[in-house]
Length: 220
Image 1: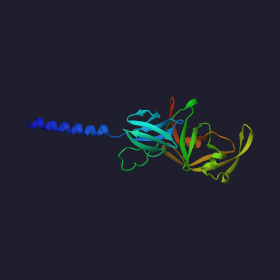
Image 2: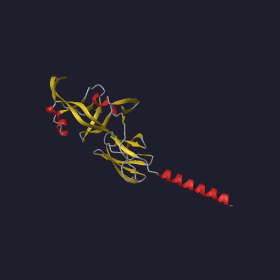
Image 3: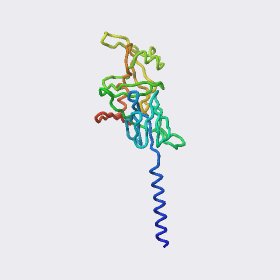
Image 4: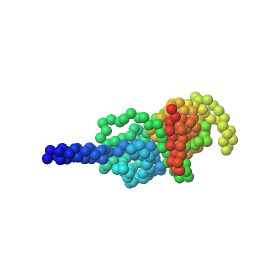
C-alpha cells in the first residue's frame, strides 16, 4: 500500500503548486487614457483597452482621472499611475523599470494620442510623424515651466504668415513606461489642442502598426 500512498502525496503536492500558480495576481500598468472613460492597460505584458466597468483577466477598471487609473485586481483595489512600473497585489516593492516599448491605440479619426510628461509635468501628446520636433504652444511651454525664450530663435511659416519660434532641448520626455532624455522641441506662438510628438522623439524607436494599434520599440 506504500506505493499508492506515495503517488497520492505527489499528486496532492502538484495540485497545490498548480493552485498557487493559478491564483497569482496579474501584473498591470497604465499606459494611457482614451477620453474620460477608457484606459490602455498592460495586463501581463499585453495591451488591453478597457472602458470603466469592464474587466479582463481579473482586472476591472473602476475609474480614470488625473493620470491615474483605479482598478480592482481579483476584487482588491489598486491605483496605477501613468508610466509607473507594473503593479501586482502582494508585491513588497516595485520591480526595476526595464520597459522598452510603448503601445498606443488609435482614437476617433485614427489619431494616436497618449498621456505623458515633459520634465515631470503631465501633458497630452498627439503623434505626428510629419513633425520634425516635438511642437507645443507658448501656453503649454509656460505651464510646463520651460525657459524657451533662452532657446534659439527661428522663423517658421504658419497659415497667418511667418512667426518667431524657439528651439530648445527637453531634459526628459516620458510616454507610457519609457523615458527619453535630451529631446529637441519647438515652441510656437499659436493655439494648439495637443503637444505634437514629432520625430525628435519618434526616431528613437522602431515603429510598427497593425490596424489600430501602434507599437514603438526603443532602439538599442
